[in-house]
Image (tube, rainbow over all chains, first blue to last red; front, top):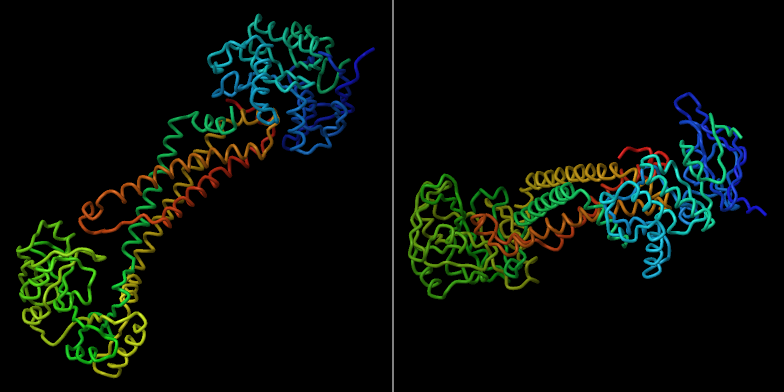
Length: 226
Length: 381
């Protein structure tokens, strides 16, 4: 029996206005992603894959159509509710790692937890567990500039999963990494999907990276190809 | 990590810029406090008990018009009047100085203690002053400035009377609101100045505060419709009329203060805008992680407020320490005496710093609030 759907996108369009020209980033896309699925989203530059990822993650809003994540229609949430929802439900991994340079690895991972009610020992346990999961417990006091690119991205993954969100979104997470580090990062994401039951959406250009997923969908000119 | 340590780390990430911003706030607030303290000192009317019992009587037409000496007997007969002394400004230049560096007044030495009781001086010096018509007493600030002591001679050339006089220092006093002046015998001025029978002002000591309004009114009435009508008023009112003449100076000082504050706002706002613009991408990441607009606004406000507060502590603290513990009279060669940093001035400067912190954070906060996560993530580092 297949897992229930976590993400349901129906007839979703996103149109950007650039001066007097309307640029269609997404054109009536419909997609269902099930719990624990590792979906690879592929397509050429400008095909709308990052836009789709942003809409699913609640950092952008569609021009039309619906996007429900775990039964919640994101369109109905205001800015503040959407921020809370992101904190509790989504883990972000970016291509450029986006760690805060003045904070140590431990503090970067701790950052999303400052918004929760978790305090003291419970918070420390959660941060240490996340760092151990990505194999960087011994680097907890290092600043981002003291880490390699692969290690930085693993810290970013730890930050994404420290609140134990059901959905992880990764926007070209291996784009700035060498092949070994890319492999390590993708292996972690795959393990999170397989062992922890996280739903993972991976945006990538690289077919090798996409192969880590359980399903691959292609976007072109804002439309799903299959 | 706490929210406070996160804010502190962000504020100090560019240490040189943070230091320069703090120093600009500190220097500006130091200047602001200094100007306010100086303005307060030059416009401060006397508040001591003696001043509350003194009435100053001058010519109604102008302070430069003299009064006839015969008025003294009339004033002395008014009930409630305890003592009346002539009080004339000599306007003398000391030795070869180009301008007058301290004020000299001719008065009745016998009434010195009765009218200006707050002047502290040894008994033998009082006696010596009263006994010798060419004697004078000098405020301690001026005596220290010129290293003058009892027995020294003070040559003065008047800018108002056609004469030069030489006075012998009989005593050095302190404890008054202005320990800079020189006092000498009015009789000596009458003889040397060549205009006996005329005085510049009368200083009157009244028996009690309750009698002040009645005595003032009686003196004014006594010379109404005479050839030398007078204007009698309390010492405080008299000093305030001088303060009114400082009007332009006040406007000038307030203008400088306004320019200082305005420049400070521009510098701090520009620093904060730069600091936040450099972190747009990071702030977008924080938004993506679930931080709301109000939390990001609180971070920016706290950072801006913290820098302004630190600058305020250094600037106001330095001013307070310097003006409280250093000898300002010596440093300014007797131009300023008390130079007191009052709680009111500290409060005003702190308020300026707090407003500064808030205003400087507004523009970057609005920019961050308007920024979408997607736009922010596209920002280059």
